[in-house]
Image 1 (cartoon, rainbow, N blue to C red):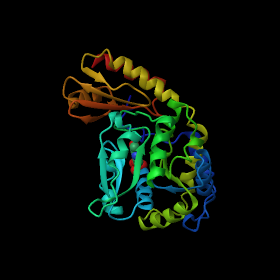
Image 2: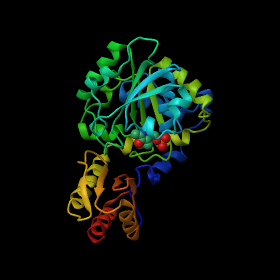
Image 3: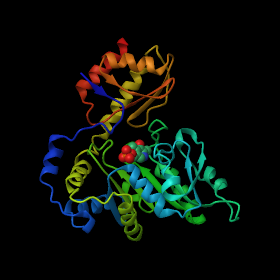
Image 4: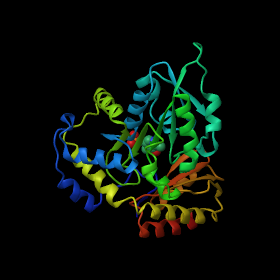
Length: 336
Ligand SMILES: *Cc1c(COP(=O)(O)O)cnc(C)c1O
């Protein structure tokens, strides 16, 4: 048996999702004539209480478009040092937007208004103009840590007061909402932009949606075109996204329960030094031996995982990890 815990991006479409894709109504989306894409954009915007959405090939593209929309060259954005937009988007902030990045160092990547306020530059020609704050929920490198709405509200208020835009990298926003019980519809009033990923825990093969107001999304269409992300009959992919929103949100709690179960087992493994407390579908743990040794031993049992440091490993739970896989992992962890 092969069990892939490297990422929640590895899921394959289910039979139901493939049916939905096969029967999708499509058109040319650059002419805004793809019914499935239009429906997905409207549906996602409505879920989060935002005006409009734009379907993009990747979460990276939604984040990069948002940063471009909310900044001018020479500006600065504020993010935690764990941020995907900074670490894992290939230097795109500098390349696409000619913007510098002010990195904070928060516990598990969870920023607060108190941390952000002193990092906003004064209006002085020496300093780059601070124009944007980017939050991530859940925080990937924070071990799947979450913001609650009550933690976000003071940050949103600070940004409004100081005239900064606020963007949410919500690649795993539904994992956060599953954990906190907060309402998605309350997010719209707090953020200028929200990226929602369909191809992580929700199990769609491709795609993310950027949400914002009408005017921003109009400009975002221009930037998406420039980046080469203007797709044509991509409604087959959007149909998978709609199916995922309708069918795969409820079940995220199973991933969270599975992560908790694995964490409990790891806790009793003598090769594990410590585990970051599990909040959602991600487990990050420190190992006593070099992480690569453990990865090799896991591979002997068909279990794939990634290191996040020389003595650190990440497991990510997702739609394709079913009870029989869990049983296999639980048994194997005790043997390696
Ligand atoms: C995966 C991910 C993204 C987007 O990744 P793509 O592979 O470009 O879709 C963005 N932010 C976070 C936190 C992620 O984990």
